[in-house]
Image 1 (cartoon, rainbow, N blue to C red):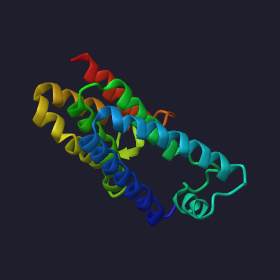
Image 2: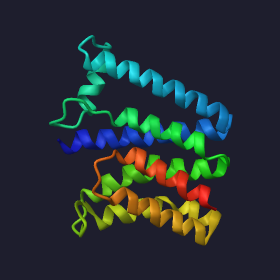
Image 3: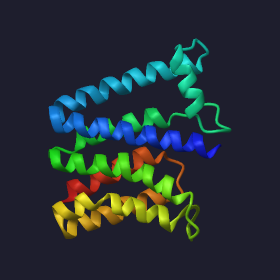
Length: 185
């Protein structure tokens, strides 16, 4: 994959995260969750049309530009929206949802953008770097500011989950970790 293509994917990641953040901040958790679920359903239909060969006009061009090289189908966008639905469903306090949206939208993208220029590989996942993990950790600063030691535990946990070498899309794992951790305290 070209560096530009991956950068575009990450900028789209940040943009969607910012839109989700502002939807929650302006409309509230419940109303925003309706839009997340509608967006997830819309994405599922559009992805089905695109990958079945029917095509969806200019959206097909976007999918081709943002698709990871070597993959027939790239469902990252769908998993991202699914993660938003998971967060909106399981995080009842709005400020916790907003913190998790920053970690997902900004942190995950920064870990990739910064990490690909990093030189210090993580020993348990050679595809990730310490620099990328540090960028993810820094993006969780709102959690540390709002929740002190619990926020630091949250930041470390989602950073660790993002760096794991697992086959599940990190858009889901970050959201699942956020929901579990925030529901523990």
